[in-house]
Image (cartoon, rainbow, N blue to C red; front, side, top):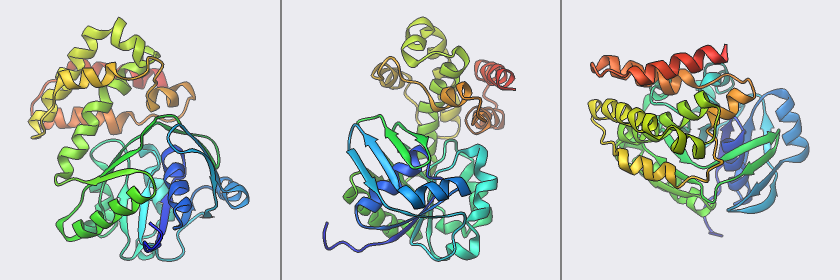
Length: 301
């Protein structure tokens, strides 16, 4: 909307997801500061971000870029991989973030606790994003899905601010909403993600092959993960998850599978490790999950 206020948004990790968010918000007229490595900073300063998207078309957006946050922002998206989180947050000093909302869009369920130990706990408002988006080079983003949806959750004291930010994101072209239950939001994402990530990565095959050639194992894994979800108090529907997977284009790969193919660090602990720790805490056996985690881990060494 033309008369909407304009904000300063920090994006820590302008990769596939962070770069898409940065470009959309910059295109909507907001000031965007991307934090990244020196080589990424140079490319963004020189050429901005170019997006090729099924949903938003092709466009370019100018953003600012730096290796650390040097001035206050209204909101900080944290969009690095879980494997890079500990190192990446050094460029986002607590004294620099001030009263900014911190919205991590990471896989897994344990990162909010780690971030709340570093920053003001009430300002850490986790989110989940549903989109397939890849950085092909610094500042070059390919958004392959025909959707980009974000759920936000956080402490009651920031609920009004989250609702305002959902409106900002909607105005920028995303589909955003505020959820009441942070735990349920994160675990629903993990339930949908973990079997997909573990099996496509282990079999080195896209979802089309996994859901046909290894369907019985996929169902068994979903049932195992669903048991862990229910133990932590979150409903999990195996049939709905199967329908979700069956709706994917057959060539769809998980981000963990792409990382494995590129010999990059895997978010195995954030996804599979978190499941196993929760299962142990609630005495829920998960032998198939454990076996897949161990085999994927051994193959990535």
